[in-house]
Image (cartoon, helix red, strand yellow):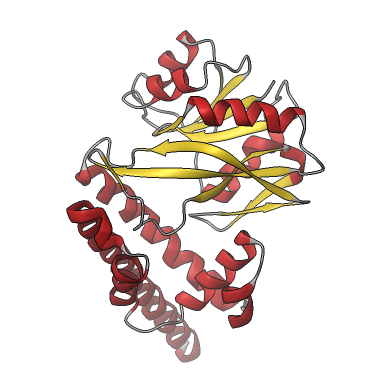
Length: 281
């Protein structure tokens, strides 16, 4: 069998369907960031194990969860409250856990939806490491964390369905406003630490997570990033094939990138002011 991990914060709307999609597991854990709605009540009524921790950043929260929660089984399947495991995926998860073939983690394909339309083309990437042995996994970055497995990785058939707009566009914007703050802070941290990146690795690395790390570092150094992101999603990844939903999603992602640019500039300005004040003191 497989243990399940769900991270929550005020997810009373989406959590019931999420829990139903993983009802096949006898060991479901909800790590909650002190929700003020009925999230904990819903989780407990479904017989999920509930733990609570104050959210600080994504990597720290995820690392704490997989290190401190007592999972019953060797393998953990992680998903968010606005995601659903399809029956085909559930069957393949079970098969992979029984016969991993030396792999310590498995990548699954996610389908993102915009108001009922599958964003088949415009997604940045549809593949995510979600089934893993917790002692072999760690996360890095404050937001949109990189999954770093300690060992070989496999890939499973079946879909993990994702509904990021289930609470409306306003909620998506509110959430990505906070994400953009963490992204700007991450950029400043990387610059302060002189984090290296490789153009070759960004394009040619066989491991998706290595490639994604270097792509992010490369992308953060590009001018006109919001416009470039729109072109990448809508033209490069053929988001136009997703119709109006593809256009709207590409525009929202471009705006999200612009928020990151503006907040990074604010942090840079604040850092320069701090240095100037220190020199004049």
